[in-house]
Image (cartoon, rainbow, N blue to C red; front, side):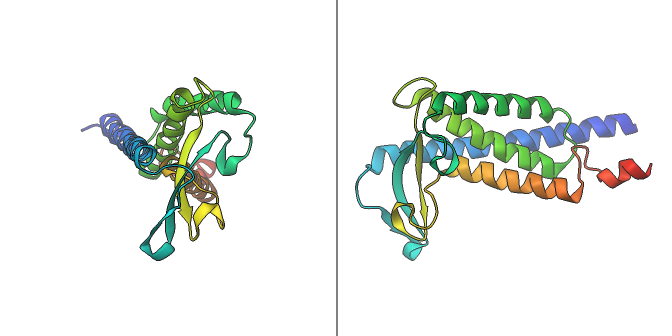
Length: 181
């Protein structure tokens, strides 16, 4: 096998990993939101899980993370579409498994919340995101209520930041490798 075909096979596996992670986050997010919306009514007492480690507590969020930008739902939808497009465009250059996971987590999360923005009430491009996980206390007392998509975005962003700090590029090589050559 030539070096070029080995590189192509490696990139194909990384893109597959990226797609798998994104699809898994998206599927888990969509399924949990459907179950929560059908079974956990807003305004009812939150459900304690694992002795209060977290609570199931449905809310609707018209803003971004931590309910910031609640008046900018359409703009947030457009930004989410742009993020999805940029990540999809970058996926073909992936050679790093860690970057594939990071971008897959962010893409799956962005797509999950984007689906809510497009198809939930109050209407197209203005939909409110279903949030339902409250940590350590009900009603978002200690940490804002979030969902699986939010967790994917945050975990992916943390991993991406760590990779950037470590100087690991999409091709899996260290940035230091490029400067010393």
